[in-house]
Length: 313
Image (cartoon, rainbow, N blue to C red; front, side, top):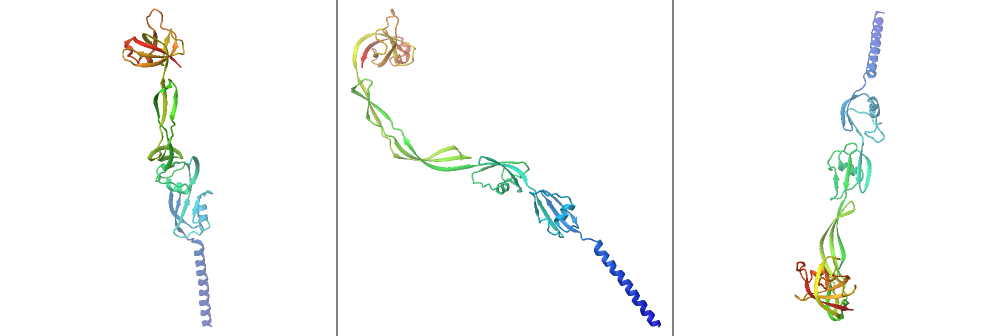
């Protein structure tokens, strides 16, 4: 009987302490949550800490980190939060890009100007100029200007103007002209190096040229045959009037052409009577316009002896 009583107490003690131990173990699992160490990059900001959240989205909610629709999150919000987790949040910056005669507003994640242009789908050629520098850090509301520079070599066919040569013809009436040989324009092939800025030509340099067809000189016969009417000898002076090869005369009517010869040096000119003079009593036969007188003698000469011949056309 005594033996049975001892066995009863042994089983009782085992049963009681075993149950208590199980309860203690259960309480530890529930009360002590797992802490996870993590790192967070939020744009340009970095911080580290710990959390008992089960997912990344739950962690962001606990920390009141708000994501905008355009923000990028890695890993995704529904991903489980693990020990040593690294979370990265990319927030775009709004910039202005002036390119190809357009102004674009862009939201970019890149950290420098080159990356922002690539992200915006803008391709650069080797000669293009970018302001600011490609390595410049991107900041909110930055303005980037892309200047397109292009250089090309272009072959152009150009005309070569012909020269005109006059030849005196004693058999042709004075002031008459006849084309003895028609002039023909030549041709040349010219290579230009052309620089364009945003599509507009800003510089053109001649690289080479080749004559394809030389021009032909035009030869014009100029009549020198004169029929003379009345002829007079007298004194000529000068005055400033129309600034043309003209003169004033009382002997010859206006609209008449005169051949005037300086009797001292033999120089000749043709002048048109377009005024009335000189005044009576001066002893002068004609007044030559200043520019006409200079072809016969210096102005300081004042007056010269001349032979005046009426030209009959």
